[in-house]
Image (cartoon, helix red, strand yellow):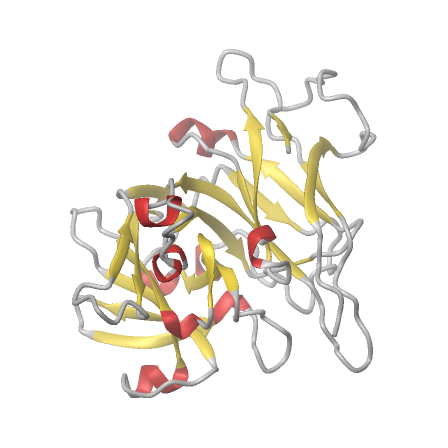
Amino acid sequence: MPAPSRCTGGRLVQRGQSHSRRRESRTTPPANAPQELHLTGLGVARSITTGIIAFANAFELQLQSPPAPQVADVGGRDEHIAAADLKAVGLRTYWAPDTPGTAESAWLLFGMSTYAPWSTPNAVVFEVWIDVDNDGRSDYRLFNTDEARFANNAAHGDSFVAALENLNAGSKHIEAPLNALPGEAVEIAPYLSSVMLLPVRAADLGLDATHTQFHYYVRTISIDRTEETDKTVEQTLVLAYDMAYPGLVFTHPLPGSGENWPSQFPDQAGATIVVQPAPNGYFGRIARGILLFHFQNRAAQQAEIVKIDYQWPYNLHLPTIAR
């Protein structure tokens, strides 16, 4: 068996700075200067026989949620509820490398973490209800499923995907593989996991260069709550997002370094994620931090939050970001 990944996020430092620079020593580069998030720890052991590659992903933290009473009670903890009880939600705008920065190439990556792992993605449902015309009514539902269940709700399979339902047209289609990685090509670590990534093309939501703002909320369901008629575990408040002005932009440090799986980052010691603070996004929506996923970690160590020490608008300095 390969050794489990123990990679964790490092502190963010200005490009060119020493990783060991004291946090109290601040600099004043341009407000949107890129910084680097360095990953540390022990990566997944790789060999010819296993072929396992550890992946990470980064999101702008949208919300943190306290545990439900049934989850906070350690003595009587309900693991079925805990597996669908949201701990954090993140969102990231990702542009395909062939047409970077264009609305037509944009993907929205929704990341959710919970207080306990699910046995299989078939045991939980994460739904993102999206209002693209901002009239207070959801127009789309993004959710996790598998190809067999998508075709026949009574069936189950292990080809896990994200699907999109057009609530106005009454149609739905498979959007992309779960966690934005094809399970037949790489290990996406869907079992005994507490993190999930749901990707959706911005164009499939009717978003374009002239229409970039939307509202959404997340609803979670525990299929394993067989005794309950309503299997809903949590529903968040309505959140706003503008893909044209994300608070943070995450990229690979070198052109082509994410060529095989460009929406992901290698989760290995010494790997780097470049973080570009975007002032317009911060002014319009206060970012709460960075939500970092380590897909191949043990469930309790899969989600990590990197805090942001945010100084502007009074002093337009680069925000200091550290663990």
